[in-house]
Image (cartoon, rainbow, N blue to C red; front, side, top):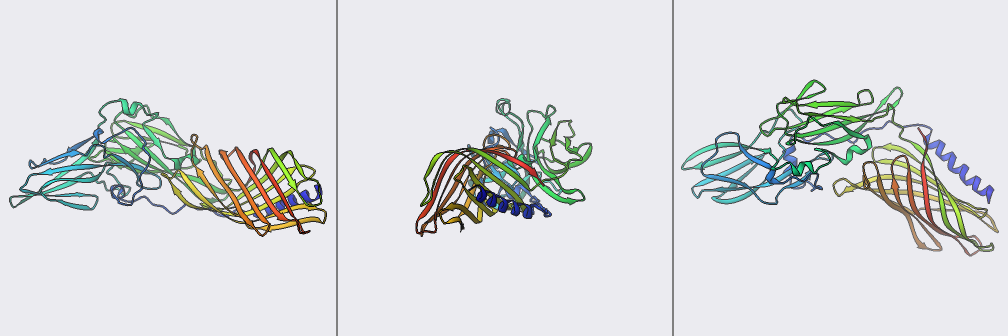
Length: 464
């Protein structure tokens, strides 16, 4: 059995060296933020998001930029405040505005390219509570066009954040909310003492990979949505975006290992400082090792049955093909005189995200090879159990993920396979509960099978 185990491991190691022998050029997912955030916020297809702060529509004032019409009354629809994911990297607020007009008035409400007409009476309309864009042009206000007695007048209004009390904001750990997309870049807030209580900021991140002379160099593109900003916003002393009547600013900043921190200030002196801990070189491919105690059983016709405790070793690795796509392998074997070897090679592809980008679904497509010893000699059985992986990002804090997954092949013609896991960890260390079961024909008309359940602890041991 020892010879067989060595053969299986050498076979797996050879594939690892072939796969990791070169590194591809990586690229970031194609993305550019919408020129109009308000348009995205008001879209009917925009997904709802988890609450990021204890804010309601009562914390926003309806501010007339120009004169107010005397035939129209405005108010918020109670409980209409919601958070929506305006992009993969930004969560922003919207609410519903109630408009009541006199019987002799016809009102048209305009915002972010949408035009809605209200007949005399009361109507409610969705409004964006973040009115800014990434294109340099600011949507400072919405408009009411009122037609009355043959005359038409246009009135501009904006929505300003004015928290009713300090309690909701003070209950936050921070007035700066960091999106789950920033976890992989280790984005941190270094200084927010100069940020007043009537400001809040949302930060989202996108990792960009660029090929350099020394390898793949990571950069972090940070999307900043700042409510309460006054006048132009400066980035480390360089004048950037303007905030408008609604006092919101939307801007982007690019960070690398050369410049890992950026300071933001508006015209009033309010500001904050962020830092991203980025390596000078991205080591995307890795080789890892896991080991732990298992309850182990092995049944092979013509040989004694094994049913006792044993350590199970897993060698695993990953080779990045593109963002969201990897080639992964594993090689598992018990440290026992009656052992077997289970080697798998799979394509891991991200297929979907749900629950405000926190749940990620990956498909696992490939094959595995089980090798075991029988009275007839060393047996090899090729199979194609397919699998999935569901990852809950930041489940136990930033960069602490929970994953559930497995490879499965139902009992068909004397063959079956299950390899399932529940894993908790970071990119540097993990612990998992693992169940591994297989049944294969033994070559003499019978069936060989194994069952293992236990805990594994592991970490990457080599990066490329």
